[in-house]
Image (cartoon, rainbow, N blue to C red; front, side, top):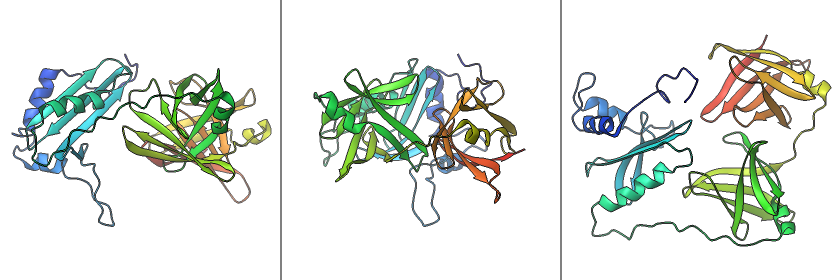
Length: 316
């Protein structure tokens, strides 16, 4: 159970019976003024300024799955995972509700859909990705992949380390997942609710980058970097109160035990780790890029966290 006062996302309690009624409303809308306009708006993909189309509509993903139009959305919160798929032309829907954080409802729902989707004359046999078997690599070879990597688009760091003869993806001091070698420079991440593969890139000097796929889709291009080493005196320059008018909340930053810490109301104190230049990161809250005035005084920071980009905080 969460202790947060959730409204909307994360705050919906439902059942399969409720979702059946919800699903039927997509075909015979009774919300608002009734009629198809609301549903047509919800399922209209977004457009970019250059004319390009997104696969995301008003809160729903629009994709092609094995040649069929798929409308879907997944959900994850505390110990729960969920997925709802709709194939509107076939009036076929699949809902999967899980009360385990390590469940994979998106994969399960698609496996169920394959059992019920009609055959097409031009259909190819469904592509079911087989798990790539692991191989053994000596510890010395695994150490070639150790380092810090930065993903610029989503603004977060990935760290790899070798321990007990295994390569690990280190998310935080208390969270990590094993990377099992499956081929040349290719690894499978284990104990995650998705199919995650990591592939390392090389040049004449060694490892030059890393890419990641999740359930077969590219998710991130990472480049190696060297973490900044900041002295307590340098960290102290960032101490202070930072306010976001958009969130109407203040972050308190201070130095403790030679580490830069931040505190927000009702949440335990968190560490901000120097990455490079003026960028710091916390694995749960995102990356903080600080700004300075001409005289070098720190004036604020910009926060990137998941879907959030350039959320501005000013120093008070």
